Image (tube, rainbow, N blue to C red; front, side, top):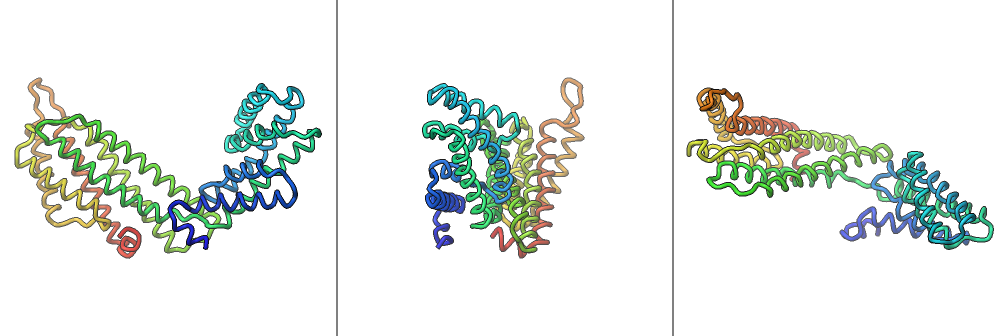
Length: 354
């Protein structure tokens, strides 16, 4: 039943685990006639992306909650139930937790402390242990649910993101080269924004990879799953190089008149080749592309030897035109590495990326 519910986009694994954690926490607190609200709030905010995070942060959140409860009890005893008490409890709880390096427990500790104030009993010590106990129940239940129920598998998301990254890079490369060889250039803010989105997406994919590594410390995985994951990291490593070259290309300052019509045609045709390789999950390179790369290499040395002399008399070893060609040649080298990797892992490519 849980697996069928998980298929709906509105009910992801973390959403289901949060609901189950809240249900079990409320059930246990109700059974022992304990205040439910504190435990339920804690259960909601302590469900993490991975079991590893839940376990690590549970050891931080418990002492942080104890600090919050102690501060709330102390300040309530001194100042009573007033606006100043709420403000001081929140401020001091955050400051103390941060000073003690309990940052992962700040939210839980502050919520625990603030929620205690309106409902204090006459016996402060009883209130302290009651609130600390209910908060602990929320932390423990959410940690156990996160560990044993629906262990997350980020690999399919990583593979999907990798395909998306390569498609995004293909579109961006086409825009950059078209803009470089165009007669009239438009503002390149759109290109820069697209590049920032690309790097942000890459960062998120690396984060998912980190989540998966952490998750496998506590849950079993097969050799096949590990091999597929390692291949995905190689593809991400290659993409990091592609992102680097795209970043350099977007800042190349050339004019359309810098190149002959034949050179511009070569640049655009080769860009189309690169786009096809990026969009193809197998990253196959045609023989025509290799021939065009050789032509581009000849153009590079032509520019290096014949076109670097400036009217000022200074010689620039890498004028913008040679930088452009150099970056494209380096781009092709990365694509060759991708093709080689994909050929070695053909079954994996077909299973995970097609």
